[in-house]
Length: 222
Figure: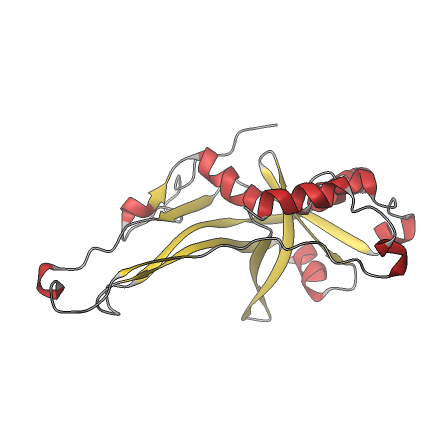
C-alpha cells in the first residue's frame, strides 16, 4: 500500500487564493475522508457536466464508490473514467457585522483522478470497505451479500494522488470601521448528530440494537 502525494502537490490542486486555508497534510486528508460519508462525484456526459452524491469508503490510498450495474454513471465511468470528487464538512457559520465579511467554518477535500473498475476477485472486499466506512463493524453483523446482489453492483476505486484540502476556521475579523456601531457578530456552531435508532418493523423492535449501530450513535451523538 503506497502513500499518496501530499494534498496540493500539483498545479491543479495548489490553492492560489486564500492559500492559508490549504493543508498539505495527508493526516488531514484521511481524517476528513474518514469522518464524512457523502461524496459529490463530478463527470462529463455528452459534453454536459453532471454531479451525483454518492456514499464512499476509504482504504489506504484509495476511495471506493459503488452503484448499480444499470447506473448511467457507473456505465459511463467504464469508458470515460476521469472524475472530480468533492467532500465537504460544514462546522459553523461565521456571522460578521456585514454579509460581505461573513463566511463558513469548513473542511473540504477535492480529488482529481480516474475511476478504475475493481476486479471481480476483489469486489466483495471493496464493497465491505464502503459498508464498514459508513457504520464500522456492520459487515460482520449483517446478512452476507449474495452473488446475485454482487453481480448487480459495480464498484470503482480512485487513487488519492491528486488532492486538495482546505480548512477554514478563521474567527470574525471585521474591519475597524465596522466596530462599535451596534451590529452583532459571532459564530453559529453546526453539527450532524445521530439520533436514537428507530426499528424498521415488529421483528426488529423485538431484537437488541446491533453493537455497530450503538457504537455509531454513541460516537456521532456527541
